[in-house]
Length: 298
Length: 334
Image 1 (cartoon, chains in turn yellow, green):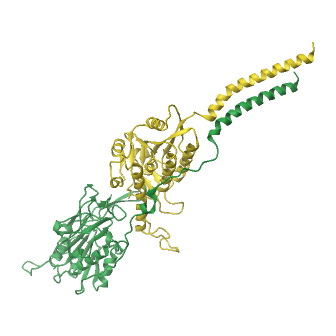
Image 2 (cartoon, chains in turn yellow, orange):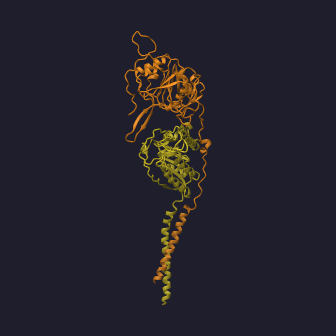
Image 3 (cartoon, helix red, strand yellow):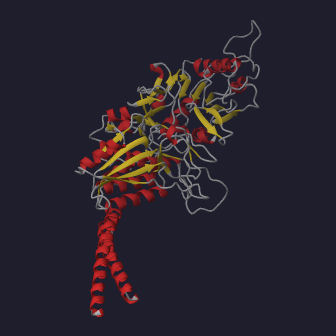
């Protein structure tokens, strides 16, 4: 017997065995990898808009919505909203991010406890707003601190360098109000049963009232909103991809769901060491560590 | 099997698995990556300046007086913890002084209001927080009956919270002593008025318009009141009313609420903000302020009124009682 010949046959046998084993192992691993990397064919993304709307939280939500737009498997978005709003600028940023998303796919909003003020602003581009029976919806208004009297002595290059006059401040806040109300009328004007004047009252409405006056569209929970989003996207079967709410960097909200005052450890107005006037689109009394604003109108 | 052959077979295994599994991974991720597309274009016509900016209400005019009579003395009350500063009413004070009239102040140190009134021709009270004594009310009534001019100004009572979370202090700020006004048939209602339909850049900045051709509203089309309380006054006494859509905060009922009224020698206005230097040149506020100044110096008060109490059988005429005991302050907070 030729030992070289039998050795070659044995080597080929082993090679065949190795190839078969590799294919079998791959056949087992490949679906797992496929599942991990490709996900379902179609999905509805649920983006949580939760807590105070601040610049840092909107950074995360904008990124969430950007990823959703770039993910070809996501065919619709549901905004899971539980927020009393926040700073005016952050709310406008979030509104525009939602609007961009709504340009590309159906967006539906589902209000949990509260979808008010800046948070309501943000969900305006949604095709349909679902509210719970006990949800608070609305509060279309703006608030801002009045100019503080000059403190100490310093040299300024102009009379309005620090904060301007009360009249100027009033006009600024009014401008923001007009844009907010204008946005409400743009998106929901044909569904509202209340006038622009009534919208400007900045009331919040519980779910059934909001549905009746057109500030919301349906009483329903997150599953109904998700199903409607899928229907609007033409999905028979779909996966639900949830985006986790961002961490609240240094901002602690206490009892915001129970309607108690929103306690903010990190001031949403101004900057460290500078009491800069800013505008808020937030519902509820705002308490700061060292002062209380009581002229709430929004 | 030689070690070299074993290594070759293991290498073959690894290559096959890597190609299949790696290829699968690449195929699975290819749909999630790639260059970021440009964000979609969005349109928001409501943000255009032409839609967003409120109409401007240019400040113009000057505060002037028409009255040309002799010099008169206007007594301003700062002795009842009045919720208004001298700076808040400076335009009115300035125009009176510029036209040769004298402005004096009744302070807490001047214990006898009636004595101060005797040398005055007009009396201005704004947001008194300290209650008037009966004798003081009687003195003001006698002053008015003798031809003295009385002007009552009052802002809505407001709840003001100050202090920290643990040391919060709640105060009611604004006029609530209605004793003087009620004796002349005018009073100030609770709450404030607002107008969501037509306002000067804020729902609380209401326009008030003249109801007729009263001297007080001569040349006045509209005035802007930033924080106004409604008046309780007879219709024929009302000289300024809110526009259609004016609403009372406490009842949310719309009405053309009376915001300024005159009855005899008494004028009442449910606001002080229009006198403030920051607001006096809005709309026709400066004209209204000039008219109020004319009102204050156009009376014809009997000299020396209100007279001190006379013994029984003494001379008759407008009199007022003595100073009486100092009253307790009006409760104002918790």
